[in-house]
Length: 262
Ligand SMILES: [Zn+2]
Ligand SMILES: [Zn+2]
Image (cartoon, rainbow, N blue to C red):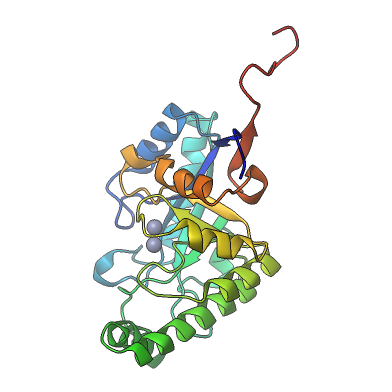
């Protein structure tokens, strides 16, 4: 247990804008981050593989967003804004739906599995078939879990992924195996504040493998940027320390002098 330690979250590394599934413009996200006193914010719109135009239309659009963020950064110097992506892992090889030369130009890369990708290849189709089949059959559910785990492990081993988004959401994974691979690659697992599915038990099992975590909002509206309370509650329940959370710092205990003379 961590007793009375107060955790302070200084960044939100997973937010969307109107470029993908989100409702607000880039500036709206930045303004909320500033109002909430965040030091860092990442804009991480969905990669292009999501069906129904929920992602960016072309991967190159991520660089256009980066250009706009650069211009907004001059207007809002108080918040460091990172241009990123929430890429889709699209097959069991761990391929992402964003080419490496574009990933290299972004400030932060997040990646995750989504059951609403547009099936373009047999492997995409397999991911989806196992997802739907797994709802009906225990055997297919187990196959789906193996497929998903292999896909994510391959992705973190092949790409510079900072954070795996919402692990285990809708698409089950082997927590221990994924956490082990992420720990070895320096990739954090996300405690997602929007979806509310992740339990303290999952976090504890993963933490035992030495992996770090990121607590993010996954905001799809500017007003939800920095809304990290639900994720923080799970982290506290699991007894995580600031050293295990990449966007957390420990606050000094109450009454502790914060600067000379106080
Ligand atoms: Zn997602
Ligand atoms: Zn997201």
